[in-house]
Image 1 (cartoon, one colour):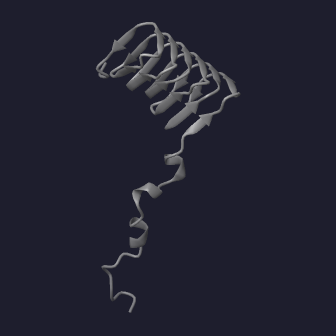
Image 2: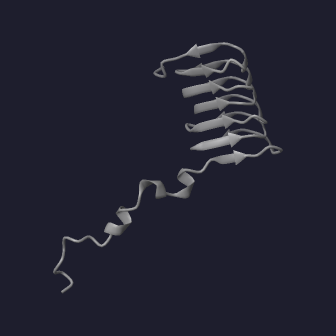
Length: 133
């Protein structure tokens, strides 16, 4: 009786879920809200939106967004970096760096891809690297 249908796997319904129903943390953006201030280094894995203040270095292989109300004083090393607020320090993006309208960066940039909006302020040097150093 129980062994008469060995080709039907009991876990089939679990594998038929759409890929968008994965773990919540895999798609969640972590937020450092406006009014929050951190003194010290910040490390994260996937995605972080900063709209507060950070005085220290930021390190990740993921995606960092420095929001319009944010101020960061320190070095940034991440895969993807988008700046909309103020950064005083060097930026190293292993994939892409973007300075959006209203961004204010005082420091150098090293990245294989760089996008600078005409309404961004950038005081420093840019090195467009191949990413294979």
